[in-house]
Length: 246
Length: 79
Image 1 (cartoon, rainbow over the protein chains, first blue to last red):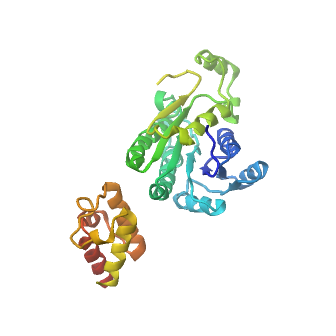
Image 2: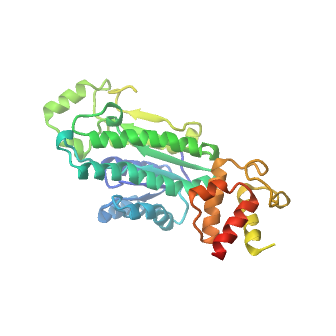
Image 3: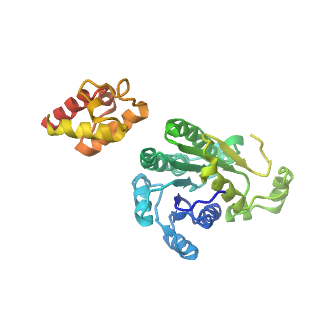
């Protein structure tokens, strides 16, 4: 079950905590994996660490042209068409709305929503023709609950869910599935810096009583990327320790 | 038959997986050749690529038969 031998996957944001865990998991299940990120040195090192069947393709997804070109670049370095696309790259520019600049809004919407759309569009072309494919978009629990200071991020992540449902309807007749994984609070450099009091409060709201590990997300992605998930599309899989039950 | 017509026919056969004899000029992609809306979009994109032309959305909507496609592309190429 859940083997990905012979499959080729692209993971964006592969230099981050969750992205690298996803890349490692898909690779361990037999997939060729192309790691993408803005920091070429980091993804190159990670690809070397994974060894055979791991490749890298740097891209700055805030540049539309780089997003448009990434799929072809990834297929070129892997020497195979993509079977799996994981849109994991994202960034935050937190600020209460009253003080949020257009630039912060646009940057987050661009990288967290427009870029994934561009990558989906470019990948779907081939997947529809090949009558197979898996797209897994990484959203966030914040897209469901909202969060003070994250109007831009919440909008992008909620938008991703609506986009994925639409693409799922467009691509379904060709056996291509589009799903979402919505992580809760995961232990990453981003959450490490939270003050202890805030961590305590966070934990008390999580029935499973711990923060998530990047591998918890990777496992969910693996399922949705596998052949076994063939009858699941347009779904959002919440992986948040029970913090929000949507 | 023109070179363009030949090529259009070939793309339709290849893409929709229908028999060549069914791809007559009057054949409607959806009604006669079993295409769905996604197929028609993919066909238009295949024509654009093969003939190096741009087919705007309002023109694409009017391309419903094999002949429509051939006429449109011939007109673009003649221009």
